[in-house]
Image 1 (cartoon, rainbow, N blue to C red):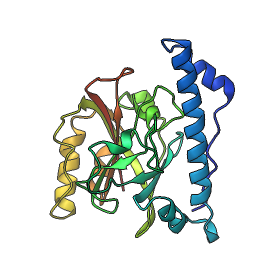
Image 2: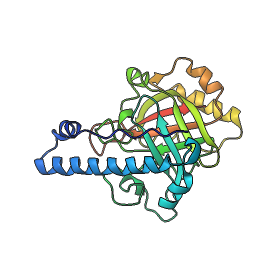
Image 3: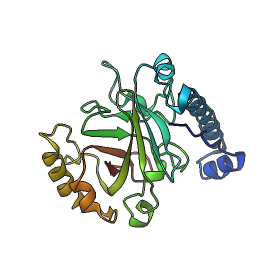
Image 4: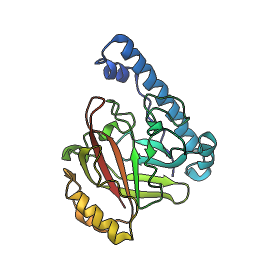
Length: 244
């Protein structure tokens, strides 16, 4: 798969994004941090796309961080990131404030719920909402609204073992962070997976045309999770479910 170069944020984008910060010092810090972290992920994306034949260079990514588990991109959005798995012994939520290189980070790095795997029937992936649409999973913060959901394209989900698959956006909802129904990773076959999806989709506030058919034919699921609210500390989470 040929990698797309990540879009670099223009200076004006940064100014407009941080103008609502509580102080000039905070605005300067946030603006510098986003520019720096955007450059880091642009570099990682370039490394990932260096493999012969246009595929992902997993060896280069592993050499940089052996925690690499997948790469996720969603058409029609800025989402185009490596996905990592926390190491044994990492504090809970380690990658919420550490980047792909395991350095402290304002933006963090998308990471898998450790109860699932990148190639499992259901992968649950967490990413930050930073109030800047071009960063992490911010674009999905209000995907529980039908008009925003309708703008989503297909997901490309790539792993070292299974290559790249295309998954379709099926439904989205905003829930409390303790929402238990999404926390399923083990299924006794596709029939159980599909029954779970059908029950889950009944609670959704945004759905694809043909959502029932998508769920009825699903073999695997990737759910992207981010905060729903525009302020830190809120309990609401947006779940956007892709199936294939």
